[in-house]
Every structure is written in structure tokens, then in C-alpha cells.
Image (cartoon, rainbow, N blue to C red; front, top):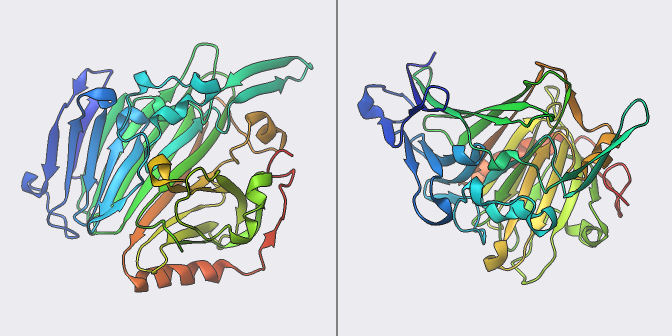
Length: 397
């Protein structure tokens, strides 16, 4: 049970804490760490003006959360090791300054700089026209923008909780609503939590249809990693059942999909779609490790909740955003029409909810990385099936 709960923002009651900090001096002792803290600040000036940041520090690992940007994870640090990437968009951008329809529906990229940003909730994938045909044969078309809306919607309720059970747990919960008249009404309740003194952080999301009609849901966690985990000789490790390139260009890199080169100016992005192997609890794990094997970041999640996985490789020049994406999702990031036709779009009845969660862990010793890789290798109970070219089940021809 929480021993302390603090409301940072509640639009309905008008309660807003502009700045604040809670730590061990507040009277709550956590056995896992002596110097934990949770603090809130608001950025000022430039495109970041008005963006709220909640800094979660468990004594070893810190993570900055952006309630103003859909509860995304901005950046973090573990034992002095930075977690995130260097985007050309150098600072968080207030959603009011992001025009999702700009550049032919690619405007989402104007605010893209987080370690983790969600793609959803009603749709994700590339911009384009979604076409839905009802049971009477009537077609409805709607124009979709890149990766959906939720990453650019501020949370209207944000609270923090501290529990002293076990080593102690610190958590931040935010509520974001993606709603529109005569459109789906979805509520995201997201909780970011960490055990005091640990090397990991957990994100648990519950999406609820708060409307009176069935509503479609798509969710993808665009988790973006740069140096020091990414570099020449870095490697992606995963228990692969099946992998296929997203497109013809990515097919050229299939033989080295799990390996990384250094930054190359103008190099086009590559993407690979996966079906991963899980254990008897339907849990799986992936790892990105550097060439030296002493820096790694792992991601664990349920293949029942998040059955699809995308590896995004964007190894262009440092100044243009040298980054890779580990992206579990309810679907693959194709146009929604394509995903619906392949049965990968979730429909929620009024009042129904869908829950997802994942865990990120940072590893800074060869022993820790070797142990994580051993766990992943143990899941690889069959030879992976590799498709040399894009397949219709995963991506459009």
C-alpha cells in the first residue's frame, strides 16, 4: 500500500503543483535506496515552454517523464550512463506547436525526441487514407497522420505514489484522453514505476473505451536508443520465430538485421517485422548491447498483450538522429486498413479495457549482459524463419 500519495495535476479540481519534490527527507524511508526522489518542474522558453517534467529517481536509475506529451519517457540515466538518443529535435516540444498534418501527415516528427513515445491510440503507422466498409457495404474514408495522436495530448491528471513495501516502489500515474465528437473516445491510464535501487523501470498502461460505441485500438511503443548502447558493432539479441523485412530496401540488410554499423550520412532507414518466441508465461525479452559487451538495455513484455515487434534501424549521421527503435505493439506499423484486414486491430466494447506493460532494464557489466543474453538464448527453441523479401502477412507488397 502507498504510504504517500501526491496529486501533481488535476484539471477537474483545478489542483496544480507547479514545482515540488518529495524524497527521503519527507519522512518515508525506503530500504532499497537512501537518496531517492520524485520532483516536478515546468520547462520555460522556446518550443518547450509549458512542458511539465516529472523526474523519477530510485537512487540508482533516473527517468524523466513528460505528462504534457502523453506520458512519454524523455530521457534517463543509470550510474551516469545516459539513456535515450540525440534527436535533431533537441528539446521536448509543446503539443500546441506540433502540427500533425504538416509535411503530408508527417508532422509528428516535429516533436520526436523521446526515449519512449506511444503510437496510437486510435491508429498508428504511416499517414494515409483509412477505408472502412460496414456490414451494409458502405465505405467511410478518413485521413490518418503518422503514428497517431496520443504522444501529443497532455495528461489531465497526474499523481505520484511512494510505497515502502519491500525495497520500496516509486510510481507516477497519468491519465490522457484521446476523444472527439462523433469519433472514438479512449482513455489511457499510464503508470511508470521503479523499485528503489534497481536498474529497471516498468510502464503499465490501461486503455479504456469511455464512449458509447465500439472503438478500435492500436498501440505501439516507439522505444528509441542511441549511444552508448548503439554504435559500430552493437548487436540486437532476440528469440526470433519469424522475421521479414518491411520493404525492398530493408531486404538488402536482412543478413545483418541484428548488427549495427556506425553512422553514415544519408543512409536510408531499415525496418524488420518479427514474431518473437515467449516462455510458458507468454513473456519475452530483447536486448541491445554495445560492441564491448559492457553496456546493454533489455526490454521485457508479454507477447499476448503485445504480439508484434518492429526493429527500426536509423543509422544515419549523428546530427540527423543516429538511433534504433525496439518497438513492441498490438500491431505492426502499417496503414490501419492493412492491419485491420489482417486481424491486428483491437476493438473495445463500451467500457472495455486493454492492458499492456513492459519493463526496461539497463545493464552496465559484462556479467549482467551475459546473463540477460543467456535468458534470451534459452527461449530460442527453434531455428528462426527468415523471409528474404517482404511477406504479405507482415507488410504491403
